[in-house]
Image (cartoon, rainbow over all chains, first blue to last red; front, side, top):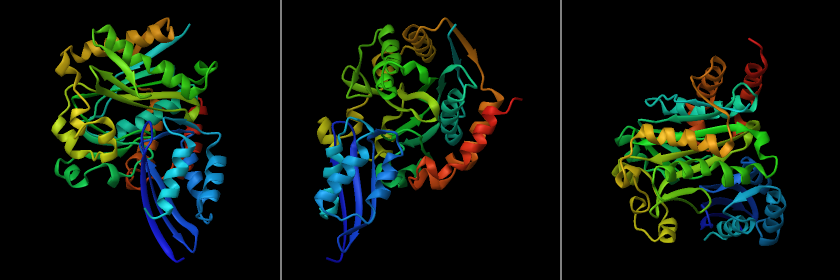
Length: 94
Length: 274
C-alpha cells in the first residue's frame, strides 16, 4: 500500500474545510484540518486530529470516528458529514 | 442594575497586542474582573486569520511582506480579514449567564449579532444577517463576525469595513476558487464593500449607534465609558508575550491548549485581591 499524501477541500454551507493527510500502509500518519469554518468548542478539531492518527484509512473507520468525536460539538454552517467527506476525499489522494 | 462598559482601547501599530487584548477581555469577563464590555479598536496594517486557518493557505505572504503588514491569528474561528485604519473592529464580552435559555453559541449568533445589525439600521442602512455570521448592506458584505465561548464568557467580535483599501484587501487575501464560485464573483472585492461608499456617516455616529443598539438589545440600565483596568492589561501582556507575538501561534496553527501554562497565571491575576 505504501505511502500516500492527499489534499482535499470542501465548501460547506458556511466556510471552507481543507484537509491535508499522509498515510502509510493504510494507517493515517498525519492529518491537518484547516479552514474558515466555525466549531465549538474549538479545540475539538485538534482532538479529532489526534484521534485520527493511526486509524485505518477506510471510510467505515473514518465515518465512525468522526461521527463519534464531533457528535457533541456545535457546528455552525457545516455538518459532521462534511468533515467525514473531506477527510475521506483527502485520504483517497484526490 | 446591569451596566455596559464601553472602551475604546487600541494599539493600531501593534496588532499583536490588539488581538491579545481581545482574549484578555473575554478572560477578564469570564473571571468577573469587569462588567459586560463593548470595545472598539483599529489596526493600522494587519491580516487577521481565523483560529483554524493556516497562514500560507489564506494569505499572499509575499504581498504581506511587501506592504509590511502584520500577520496575527485570532482566538476565534472564521475567515481571514485585512485591517487598516479604514476598518472598525468591535467586540463584546458578556456574562455566560445571558445564554441560560439557549445554547451559548446559538445565543451569540441569534442575539448578540443583532447589535451591529440594529446599529446600522438605526443609521438608515438596510443591513441584514446573511449566511450565519455575515452582515450585509445592499447585498454586499460589510462585516464578518466570529465568536468564542471559551474562558467562561460569551465573546463576539467583528470587523466592519468603513473605508478600507480594497486593493490591498483583495491582493493580500487568498480566496479559494470554490468560495468565489459559490458567491458568484471573480474576486473578493466584488463581494464586500465599504460602508462609507454607501453613506459616509462618520465613525463617531457608528460607535454611538453600536452603544445604543447593545443598550437596548441587552437591556442595560447604565452605560459607562472606561479604560482598561490594570489587571486586564496584565492579562493582555501575558497573552501578548507568551502567545500572540509568537511565530508558533501565528504561523503554526497550534491550539489554545499549547499555552495551558498561561491559564494558571491568568487565574492568579483574576483571583489575587490587590
